[in-house]
Figure 1: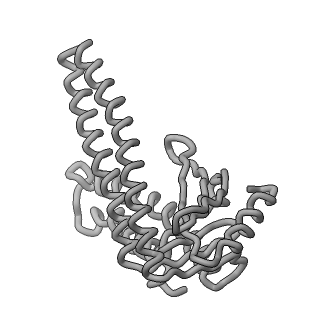
Figure 2: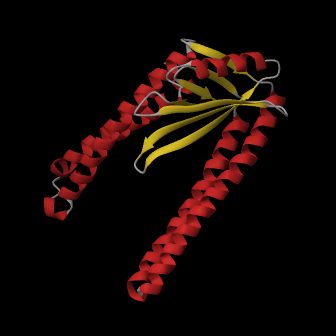
Figure 3: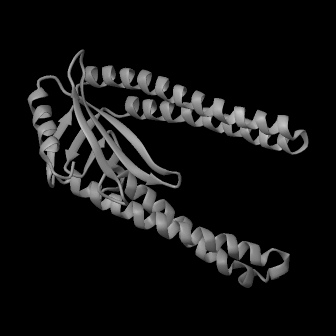
Length: 244
């Protein structure tokens, strides 16, 4: 595998190093003579927990790396699109504007709910409620930062790399971001083709399990000029697929 062209493989390698260091950390107190009650037990426990997390992350991302390597090799690819700089810039600006508005709206709704809960707790019990309110304020700050950062990071990536898209039956890879709906309980919910002012878009909606339940993701794939017929074929493929 080419690590530079396979971000999940880079993540796998990074976590392999972290996990190896954590394994050493489990035994470090014994190696350096740190007594258990003087922090040795705590170090071993934290490093042991990190080893477990690392193994899980490595397994997940190694699978994603293999999947991406298969996609990049051209196996079972429905379409492979490249874009002109002008097409990609139009998409980048449009996508950034829409994502920023969407993230801002979601962050606002969640923030209002969180602050309302904090205020209610504070009004009911000033002494204990102040801590709940403080926690809600911190949560709102985290939500606001996350909403800004995800929009900014995707925009930065889109401007840094000239876009390229691979679409397969089980996944799509657009500008160094891998989306798959056939692993770990994920599912493809819908595929739609939105023609109109360039660029036209193939809109994929899929759901994947998280700690809070199933989370929905939407991926907008720009259709290069003159490739609308291919987009229709992709749409029909998923519409007629019994698993779509």
